[in-house]
Image (cartoon, rainbow, N blue to C red; front, side):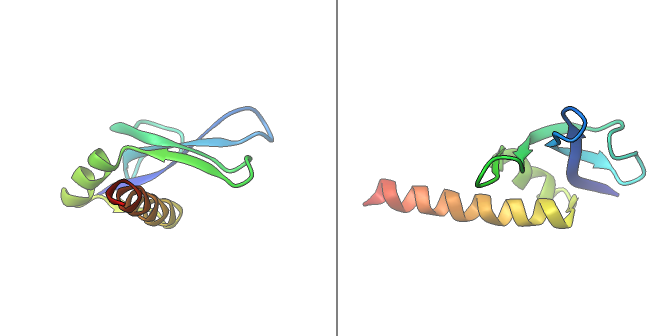
Length: 89
């Protein structure tokens, strides 16, 4: 099964993450299929960027997001909705 999950990057004690599509059996920092974005929990508030178009494609193909990525996708959709409403106004 294919999952959308976080891949750890950054120095020791200074974690940042890439949001990747990977096979469920590969290790956390191992082989992946595609990078969809990044997440930095060390900023206040935590910052992230996701390619919504590619994320939607992988979800349509049956990829399952991890719990953390599901929360980020929910926030990204809310942000996209707010931007669309601001442009329409």
